[in-house]
Length: 412
Image (cartoon, rainbow, N blue to C red; front, side, top):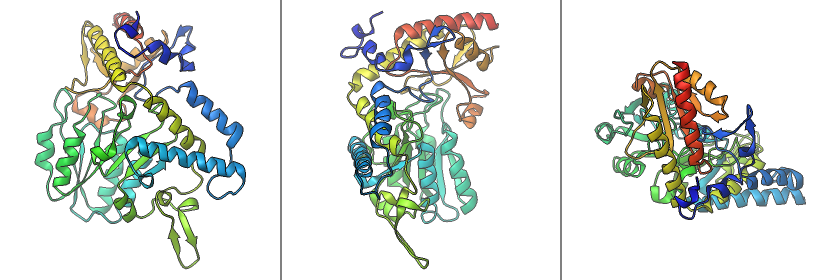
């Protein structure tokens, strides 16, 4: 099937050719990679950039005056500048982290030192990843805060009535996932941000799942904090970004200490570096920080409308196929969702499904997807999740559906 005839200005074959791993065999079968919500594969330009860094530039940054150090510093700061422009942020507002989880923890621990008092309330949703639940629980236990949960409906939509009914003068922060990794739900984050700000609350948005499906402008969104990871955006692992509004970052104390976050040290007193370095202690993930920009540039060059149309075509095709399987129940049917298909099959364990699919080279994710409270909300232990990205094809979806149907019949 020629997918390019369906999606104008989008050639999935050309996209696939840029990802070397898609050429490999798994157990003698061509790889069908449907685990993109966990991590995305890397285009050749990203792989080449990693090799180039270690072959030509490797040195520590910022403090060296020799050529390699200066080149590395310019490359890393150039990456920060590019990502800031892509986000619509100031350079000083872009903090390199180890990923979304560290970005959230940075805000929790730093903001927690001055923004909250006993009895204050924090709102999160029922569909949050553990990384956006547990750090807030720890903070609440330490400071005597109250953690409240915004409900969702049976289809997986955020209940705005639940959000607004719990939003009050006691609410000091709302922390919400932009796009659910387990359901695919795309939340009305701009509405949440605007309503929260009217109530005097700050907002953190977990953008980890959103960034690989379209451009996000943090200035237009107006969230106070926005966090995401490189490895879910076609870049290296162990790298992420925390965007924070400059006036808030200026008020927040350092999260970790040592190295680049220091301006001057004596035994009597230490002064801290300016933004963004105040939050970047120690030797950074230099290669990852540099190469992250290459991944963002690669994605930015795509036609994002065509990407969205392609991914929605994949989701529709997969959904149509699986609805013909007796006893299969889709978990997550929100009105607005991204290319994630999560499901359970009556009488079949999700891990058994994944193991059988793997024998055909098909990679899917199973389990609770680090969203155990969400699984309990739906009365299940976990799901099988197929998550689609820009390089997946309709032919792969058809193959997946065929093998899924046969696997269900075998396991029953």
